Image (tube, rainbow, N blue to C red; front, side, top):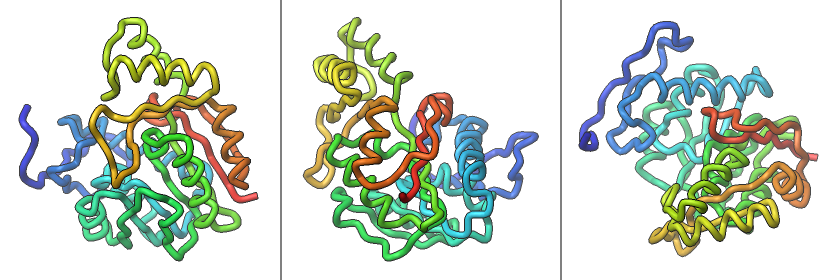
Length: 253
């Protein structure tokens, strides 16, 4: 099916708990693959995770917001919250800020240079550290600490054992997966089993001079890096988001 070129509206399936969710989808929203039920349920899964830890959140940061797959459900579930959207893609930020009445901030490839001058009750991080090398992950955890309220929670998705298992199978079969060449798949899987963390860049993708690709990390590695950054882990749950990503919940010390 060719990619859409015009804005279009979602079909809301029966039983969806937020029937008044904003339905407009941007044509560049790569998270929409002609399956509105799954698209909406991924957002619902995210807000269920948020509400479990901060049911009365008054300020929320969605980073990376993309074109609003989760943002629209955050807005539906927390309509009165002060919402900030942030992404490296300026078109995604513009769309989300305008559509969901949010503050929009373009991100930076170097998180040491990203300052929002605001603190939040919730920072939702859906599929960001899943694309970063170890140094960038650590810098992002420091960014989290600078932007969390004292009682705030960062809810962060990561690629764990589930994704590592998929990549291990690709290594055995000597094939490309997740946009990573077969040679780099093998190297990142080996690194993961040796150290708890593996990373490989996409074959031909550079983001502002910074490598961008796929990472996999286990719970122990994540906990150690969170602690090294000066934060603490509240909880960890395997493939809790979309039956795919692990979820780690982080707070200030």
